[in-house]
Image (cartoon, rainbow, N blue to C red; front, side, top):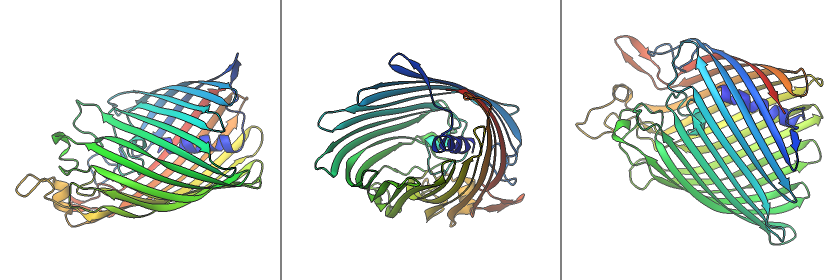
Length: 429
């Protein structure tokens, strides 16, 4: 998706040290203004297979995104505020809303005796930013405005010369437009917190262990029934992870953590998650202007599909990026992800004798598994320190085993292929 490519481009800019992000000094503050114009064409705007009613519809859109950033460094602390607005308009498809907004606040305060206090807040009023409310990528298309707000608090303090103990808390809430019944996911609230222990192995690396607890409360309504179920999918989750993070010499950096996680759903009789989780991100930079990244992960996410309480996403991504000259840069990568579901499809999810969703009736007994392949690349050119041009291409193939037959033939509701081209122009400091 477009968001994935933009995130990869941003990672490329940071890792090879390009001109972007210098900022404009304004007294004790630094000002980061930017504006971006994007043109994109896709051959499958609704991300559906040709066997479905809206499958394989081509369309193009224009996107305009101004942002303002302010950073206030002082002594051993800093505050950063980023304000963003986005206007998006398709040529043929009529979006429910053209406007998205985001506000990001990050802060880091010295607390004395080596302690550190952090407060971060991420707010977005979005429309099609599906990964904001479903980061595991179960739902792939949305056209209902939503709001997400995530608050993070943290405190770290040294307890020995080598050991640091930290406390953290989180609050995350998602709300869709109340007057729209065709929501792509359900509203939910999440509250969590935990402990973090870090032991220094060298000035640039450490062994880190975290214990985290999250309580999640999905807010379902009767209008959700024909997309989801009337199950209570409220859950509590414990996750213990341990591993290495930091840098080795000047060319190798990243993190590698493994652990164990449980998701307990006490108010229904379907499967609970209990298994291995992992989060690995390693970067190798053999020369200053070239970098190789490897990302691996396994995690369970809450599900809105039939009677499944969760799905497990196992993924890997390999990426190359290079600054060929002071003007020209490129990025290329490949991602593979498999989403697996523990339960077979049930037709009577609303209870015996109650109406059933036709798709659930025709696919009952099947156990869903989605295999996602994504190939992407970017070419970029800096005309000046502040102005850059980029061209992106992405091919995505999502193959799900869920299918059903009727008088019209076979239907694959969660399978699709997409080719997407994105052209970007950005002016920024």
